[in-house]
Image 1: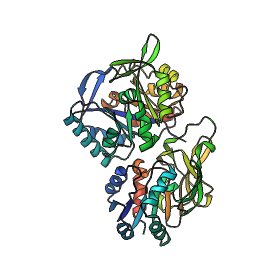
Image 2: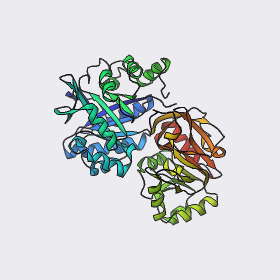
Image 3: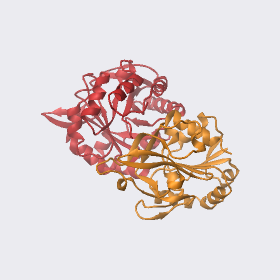
Image 4: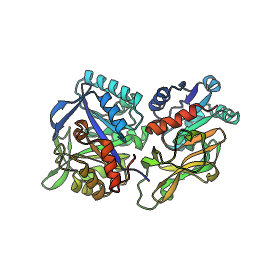
Amino acid sequence: MLAKRIIPCLDVRDGMVVKGKNFQGIRSVESPVALAARYNLSGADELVFYDITASSEGRALFTDVLRQVASCIFIPLTVGGGINSLEDFDRVLKCGADKVSVNTGAINNPKLIGDAAKRYGNQCVVLSADVKRVDGKFTVFSHGGRVNTGISAAEWVYRGQEEGAGELVLNSIDTDGVKGGFDCEMLQSVCARLTIPVIASGGAGKKEDFLQLFKTVPQADAGLAASVFHYGEIDIGGLKEYLSQNGVHVRI
Amino acid sequence: MIAVIDYGVGNLFSLAASLKYIGADSAVTSSPNKIEDSSAIILPGVGAFADAYKKLEHSGLIPLLKRQAAAGKPILGICLGMQLLFERSFEYGEHAGLGFIGGEVLPIAGMVNGGVKVPHMGWNSLIFRQKSPLFKYLSGGEYVYFVHSYAATNCEKSVTAVCTYGGAELTASAESGNVFGTQFHPEKSGAAGLKILRAFSELK
């Protein structure tokens, strides 16, 4: 039976892992290579790296980090941040990424999803969408959650699937960093029509939040979080034991 | 030396890195001489069957691979590389494969219950069906990482492990003599995957 996945997400700036709240107030945590190795040992099913660097020096540091991680950790690695073209796909795939996540780049140019899927296969293309409630409607935001695109989230992610995305990361801006639980209402509403795997992101604060996610949103194949893992508030091994004891099928 | 066949299909970074990590001597290559001199061969692959087979044909390596298989050299096909080992695939039409293992490749959508997600993507556990030298460091039940929309079928005699998905049993690995295939990615399957690669690298 297919296991539900637990995925730590590492935002990397200038070669270091950072974490903010509600997409703001960013501060450095530790070396991504050391952190990735620790997560691998504790049973992480996959790792997601977001490159949040603006400078080209930072970008070179990022690919160095990626190459180091991919040389010693053998679980799926997803890379996102600043992916706007097939050349960007190429750059990170050559450094050991297995999947590439597109967000603003796909909003600006939806054709990028299909072009990448044709070249690298659907399994390689992950659509990541940042969603926030605007006047009661689930709406897609771009540029790291700063720009309201006015696009309906449900329509956008469905279009992404039709264009050729093989997986979806759905981030709730409303619950991100708040640690009050995943945005189950948004997840259920936005991914109702999808047939591709869905990774839920934003809001995990305790083990119970993951259990609630998997029990109430059957479409969710994975739960993603950052700071609760980085700061050791939730231990991945302990979380998976807890989920297993409560009837959620996980890899132990 | 293990020759990892480079025929322009997929990303070979992890496979090369994982072989290096377990201390196996390996080379990513399309050189017939190197492949001839190798102690074992890995055939990787992602994407669509017909496209990959065509690329393999263009590489001119198929006659060599057939000779190597017949000569008894260990060959491991991974994911689409495994599917290429079978007689034919029905991915977008009917296409001939290498025919090293009896059986054919069909869509998962026709095997699983309605409403089940395809591709079959993520970690699933192995249920052994036959003893395999690839599993000598495993005990059964290990989770390995899959990403595929098609699966080998009508190959019961060759199946060494299956996994359950959507009410069906999918072929996870198969072998015939010195030819092995894993539908999952051992190079992405954590410690269990490295154990499988180590077992393969020790085959004579």
